[in-house]
Length: 208
Image 1 (cartoon, rainbow, N blue to C red):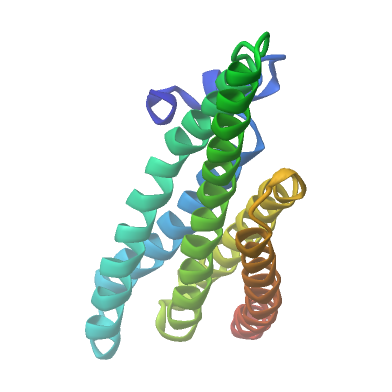
Image 2: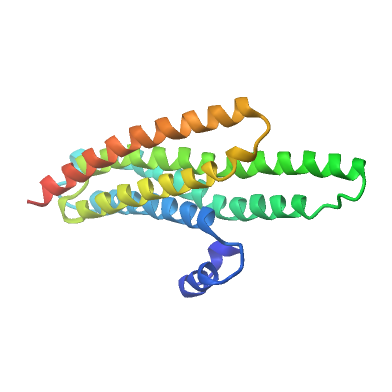
């Protein structure tokens, strides 16, 4: 399983000529790293004397960030499966009209899955970005920079996932779904960019 690989082996696999893991898996990993950093800010804050007033908020944020970390970690394998499924559809025989029809249907089904997977990744990353606001506001000052790194990782992951949506939608026959996916992706990027900049400025301000 990809997420159980040593970091060096994972990077070697990303750098190889193999089609998977690729950018979609990297996006999910970056998103999970962002969530993990938000959890870390919470854990450190909860262990610090003088931070008792933030305890309830940090516990609530940590509960959500850990759920998101688990979701994004699982999406690493989901991305590989979606890509492999699409490649398998393209390899289906097309010698007869029936085969061509079945192949075309399989490709469209797989293209939708390959679009929905990064879209779901982007949604989870958007949630991490929202959580980072609370971590940056209430987290212990000694680790507040990690809240900033977390939001930047999540926003980079979201934009990376967007690219994996954009590469698939032109080939989708279901234009209603394609247009909806594009519109949602554009809105998420705009909103998340604004929040990310706000959190970065907040963190920078707290660093002095």
